[in-house]
Length: 175
Image (cartoon, rainbow, N blue to C red; front, side, top):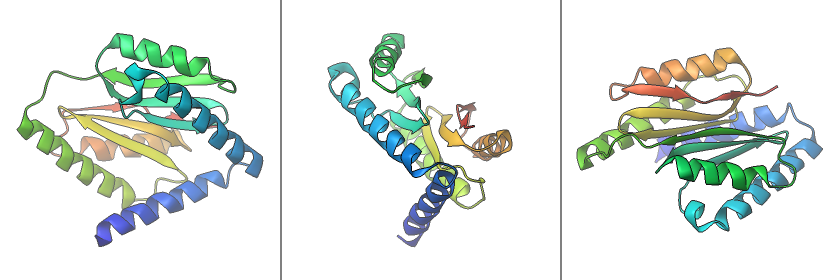
């Protein structure tokens, strides 16, 4: 339980650092945009149960996660692009790799925990939102970071896990 608390504290601290680069108005605008995007997705039956990651920064919306097919990606992009205030959509939605066994699902879960612990244990600058998804040994990193170096470091950490077969580094370098 202490590790979970430490991870939560590290993520909260990194969120605070990143938001220090934004004005109070920008933070509020991002929160409102995030709520609008979530509401639009929930209204679409095909999208509402996907559990995709949604991040916003200065009007840029990033969608991340593994989905069933290209049609789902297209529907998500169309839905989010139509939301008032969205300047750009960065799609990091990827079709799921081949079906996985129960054993692979367990390995993916363990890899997810280890990678999140690794990310929480190092300084990622003012990265405020690094999401990790693992499916079939493929690690997907999404969110916003402050530099190309931070993006590279997160990718290296994800690659170093013993169950990682491939890494899709979809981290967006915020400006």
